[in-house]
Amino acid sequence: MMEKMIFGRYIPGESFVHRLDPRSKLIFVFAFILVVFLANNIVTYALLLAFTLLVILMSRIRLYFLINGLKPIIILLVFTFFIHILFTREGDILLDLGFLKVYEEGLRQGIFISVRFLVLVFMTSILTLTTSPISITDGIEVLLNPLKKIKLPVHELALMMSIALRFIPTLMDETDKIMKAQMARGSDLSAGPLKERIKAVVPLLVPLFVSAFKRAEDLATAMEVRGYRGGEGRTRYRQLKWDWRDTLCLVVFVIMTALLVFYRN
Amino acid sequence: MDIKLQQVSYAYSKGTPFEKYALFNVDLTIPHGTYQAIIGHTGSGKSTILQHFNGLLKPSEGQVHIGERVIVAGKKAKELKPVRQKVGIVFQFPEHQLFEETVLKDIMFGPMNFGVSEQVAEARARELIKLVGLPEDILNKSPFDLSGGQMRRVAIAGVLAMDPEVIVLDEPTAGLDPRGQKEIMDMFYNLHKERGLTTILVTHSMEDAARYADQIAIMHEGRCVLNGTPHEIFSDSDTLEKYRLELPHIVRFQRKIEQLMKKPLSKICLTEEELAAEVAHALREGRDAK
Image (cartoon, rainbow over all chains, first blue to last red; front, side, top):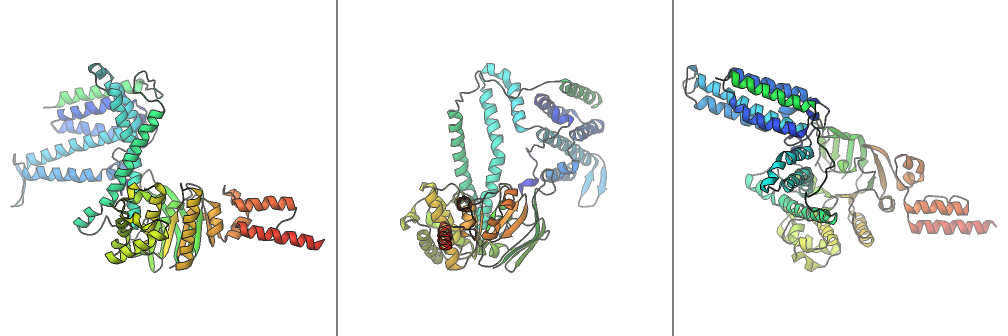
C-alpha cells in the first residue's frame, strides 16, 4: 500500500544531483520555491518547467516513477486546474457549452497554477529523492549554525529531525507488521462501512503507540549510556564538502533568476 | 485442509526501483495434518512464504491453494476472511499485537471478528488461558501489565481462539527462557496431535525442527531447495553445510559417539531417548559379538 509512495524517500545514486553538497541543494530548493512566484507569463513558466525537467534528467530518476509516486498530488493538481477553469470569469469566452463557459483567463490561470504546483512538487521531491535524510539534516544544521548566536538550539533541532526521519521507515515496517497480525485475526481495514473501518484502526494504533514510546525510551537510555551530552564540542564523522559543482549550481540558479526577472511582465 | 504452493514467486515493491524478489518458483505441498517445519537463514524467504498461507501476500507469479480456495497471481482475491479463520498465524513477537483493555477482550477479538458469539468467544478464552499455562484471573488484567512471557502466551491464545485448522508459527519461542520455550513448543505439539491440526513451524532452530516436525523444508535465497523427513534431511550433512545450516545438537553428539565407538550407528537419532536406546543397542551387539 505504502510502497508506491515516494514522499520523503531516498533513492541512492551517483548522478550529478546526487553528488551535490546538501547545503547547495537546500539553498537551491528554498530559493527556487521563492523564485517560482516571480513567473507570471508563458515565457517565464516555460523557463521554470524546462529547468525542472533538466534537473529531473540530471538526477537520473525515471520520470515514470516520479509521476507514478506523486499520483495523489497529481489528482489534487487536476482538481485545482478545473476549479480555475470553472470559476475564473475574465477575458474572452473560449468554449460555451451553455451551462459551462470557459474563459481565456480561467484557462491561463489554471495552466499557470498547475505548472507552478508541479514544478514545486517535482523540485522538492528531487531534493529528498537524491539526498539521504541524514545529509539533509547535516546540511540544515550547518546552514542554521549562525542562529546559535540568538540562542536557537540548532544542534538539538537537527538531532530531533534526524531521529524523526530515522524512525519513519521503522514505524512504517511496524505498522505493516501489526496490520498483518490484526488482519490475520480477522480485522479488516480495507472493506466494510466507514464506521467499521474507523473502529478497525484502534487495534492498529494502540500497539503502534505502545511500541513507539518503548522505542523512544530505549533510545534515550542508549544515548545516555553512551555519554551523549548535546552538541557542545562534538566533532563530525561526515564532513560536508563544497566543490565546483555546488558553485556551478548556484551560478546557474542566479542566471535563471536573472532571466525570470528579465522576461516577466 | 491441504496447502499447496505452485511455482510461487513474490517480489516486494513490484514496479518500483526498490523491486526485490524474495521468492522464486517455490513448490511446496503441505498435506492435511502434517507438522511441517520450514528452516533457513535470515533473508531466505521464510517470513515471506508464511504470509502466503492465508492470503496476506498474494503471489506475484504462480498460485496458492488453501483448501478449496485458490489464489492466483494477478487476479483479485476477494473475501479472504474464511481463509484467515481457518489458517491462524502466530507472528514473530506476537505480543506486539495486543491492544485491548483486558486480556479477555483481546483473546475474544479474533473469534468475534469471524462472527462467533460473545458467549462462545468468552468460553474459548477461559479454556485457552489454562491451555497456554496462565491462571484464569489474569483474564481481567490489562495485557500491558503482564510480563513479556505472559504477553506472548496471551497473544498465542488470541490466535488459537479463532479455532483454526492450520496453525502457522513464526519463531514462536524467540526471546523466551529455555523452560518457557519447551512449554510452548510442547503445547503446540499436543494441540497438533489432539486436534489433528496442520502445523507449520518457521524457525531456525534445528533442534525444534528435528524434535517435532514430520517434514522439513529448507529455504535458501528465496528457493525451496529441499523437502523431506527429518531423518532424510539430517543424514545428509554435506547438503546442509552447502546451505550454511548446522546439524541439530543431538545429531552432532551422535557423530562424536560414533567416532569414539569407531563405527556408525544404524540410523540418525533425533531425540535424546532415541539416541540412548540406539547406543545401548549397539553396545549390546558389540558384547554379543565377543
